[in-house]
Length: 135
Ligand SMILES: [Zn+2]
Image (cartoon, rainbow, N blue to C red; front, side):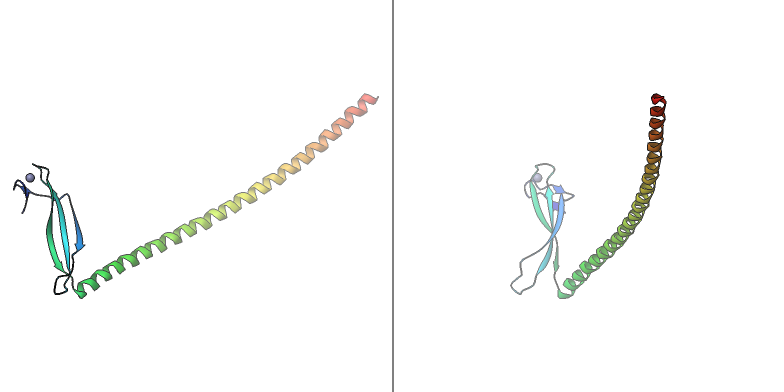
């Protein structure tokens, strides 16, 4: 039970909690402390309470490092999967762009041919009109 140091009423839930490593004791032991920050609902006084004290052992430290390593490997794995997915998406998009580029080039060459044909028609019509005027 946590009590407000000023007015003594019980405060139920901490505003936040965090862990920190305390200074080594005279015997060289280190402790991991869990600290809670509380705010009294009556007087609004904020105060900290040590909620847990855990001796740091080599075994515990190794376990913690292993845990971090596991998390790291998992992150790495999911990043690799994400990159693979993005790369396959990229190659799909590049293939699509290439297809569109080819279609565009084909369309352009068809249009060029159409224009060349139309130019010839215009030339022959001009010639025809010129011939008519000369008569
Ligand atoms: Zn209080």
